[in-house]
Image (cartoon, rainbow, N blue to C red):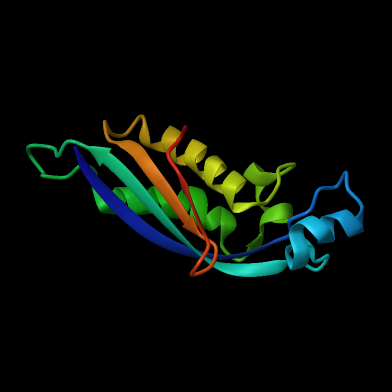
Length: 138
């Protein structure tokens, strides 16, 4: 099994808050991330796909194809957007990195399945240089 990764970047704003809670409780739980006027990050997204290399090309997946899918289905939806307000696949969901990476998985998994036998292995989403989330589709 060979694992191959593609790294992409996007900038986005979000706000962590539970609409069922008071402003005080949101501030207690989420701190400055509950700011009414949002806050932003320079996100790094790393998508890892696994599979056996094709005997004709040597590729698990053509990285240009993978990059095009990520850009079309994920980056265009998120880059320079407000995750809470502007991203259809995040409507009504908590805009945490944990939830975001799970939604990204669903989209990429559905896009890859008809094109290749390679499968998603991991998605890593960096919110900051020190904070990141890994998801394996489980």
